[in-house]
Image 1 (cartoon, one colour):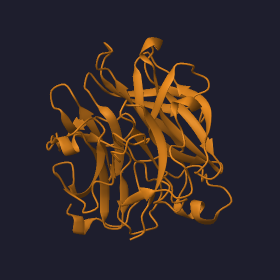
Image 2 (image 1 turned 90 degrees about the horizontal axis):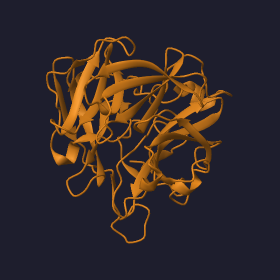
Image 3 (image 1 turned 180 degrees about the vertical axis):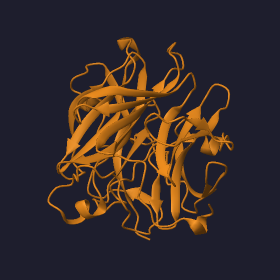
Image 4 (image 1 turned 45 degrees about the vertical axis):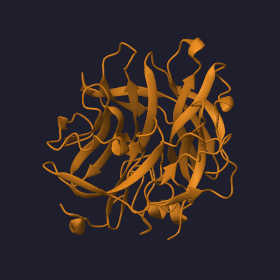
Amino acid sequence: MSGDGISRRQFVTAAGAATVSALAGCSSLDTGTDPYPGETTTETTPALEPHPDVTNPVLTGDDVSDEPFADYVADPFVAVADDTYHLFFEVQYVPEAGDSADIGHATSPDGLEWTYQGIVLDDPYHLAYPLVFRWDGEWYMTPDKATYDYNGIPEFRIYRADPFPSEWVLAERAVINEHVGDPTPVPWDDTWFVFSVEQESVFGTRLHYADSLREGDWTEHPASPIATAARSRRPAGRPVVLDDGLYVFFQDVERTYGDKVRAFRVTELTRESYSHAELDASPILEASREEGEWRTDGMHHVDPALAYTGGPNVVPVDGKTTSSNWSIGLYRVRDG
């Protein structure tokens, strides 16, 4: 469908468990069965700025108190349940630890001050990009299961919380024997789409679709790969759906890996066709190039879920130093 045909829809790619009405005025943020994020509450297109009420970064590798060899944290995704904000993120270890990255968890009463809680998902292979969401009354996580240089079998995995937020069990191996890196699912027009990255032969952003999230027959889209240029080579966080359409975020790796995040409006998305156009505000995140800053050499991730569903105007992002040490900061959606 064209951009003109896109109506007001749920802000979908998922993260927690609330609708706009719950976030805006009810005593509990958790509606029980509704998907989160819910409907959008603003027509402001994505344009970001550092949050004025925090000192970035808000989480670093030093906060990972249960892992003495933790090196850095990255790829933050936010969720909401029982009046508590949850953040899930990659925890990478120093090389001498001989361990691959895991998924960590932190909580906050307001989305601004975060307290590290512990590792919630461990695996023999590198885990990252823990997109967490609720659908049909269940909490799910679709982390990147990187297999490059880890001698693993590439696949797209879906985990289910049992219970949320501390325990996750493998619910489905949705796509096996294919590289589906940084999987970014989004339901759209009675179809589930998954944006991902392939780095061995395609070197670009891929797109798959299925009738359902669970037990779906995932098929690669005929337009896939939808982007192979260095400025849009892989997903960079949770998409948003506003009144005028779907917005997606891709990494720009032209200068260096994780250099900046560019924003695109999807102008057509069906099972047969796909197109997008870059926003005037793009890039929305990029390296400061200022020596000694937490984001001196790059920024490569964004999750605007809270800001676009009636919650606090808080957008988790990440940034890296010149030594590729990543940490997590907070931005906000700029008004206008």
